[in-house]
Length: 253
Image (cartoon, rainbow, N blue to C red; front, top):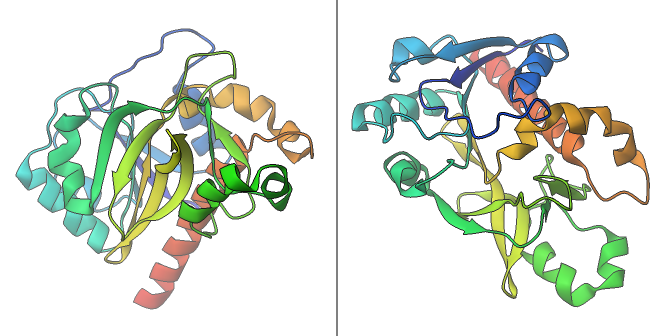
């Protein structure tokens, strides 16, 4: 299904400049493999900007913050009418996003996980290895079409210092990614229904910057001895969004 994908370029602040970590690879993949129409928002949000788009992606926000009250109202109405918002962690000062995210029961924190990866789900094999530890993850994770049966999702290579950041969400959200904070499992990825639309919150950014690397190693995700499921996780997200949009269009006929 071809969807229209709008990136909030006005708020985007790049944090990586090395050739190996290029966010444009992800946008190219959206256009070439998924055949999405990719566009760019270069100013403040208005309903006229959003009306023809299916997905609005706030990626690596850090410029021109905070969002105004009027922008938050317009974005909320658009989601209620069936739009899909995907928002990643900001590059700095997460409090500048509060005036937007608090509308949706979401808060980005400045707290970094100790692990380079988060768990999207917990397999029976892992539960047998350490039921006490992995039971903590299992307790907070939702059984959702996006994360069900998956393994871990890495923000960066194991030897890097790249880590997911924790988010805080209200009970309206389904948690689809979690890490340990001390002895307690806390969310780093979550999704919720909002009116007729969807909101997906991700406490990561390098997952997208390094997209070409993960894509080249996608075959490894199918191996039993591999615990990373990065590309599968992202594919599941867009499969779920496409099914949501198909259902919405069918109900509107």
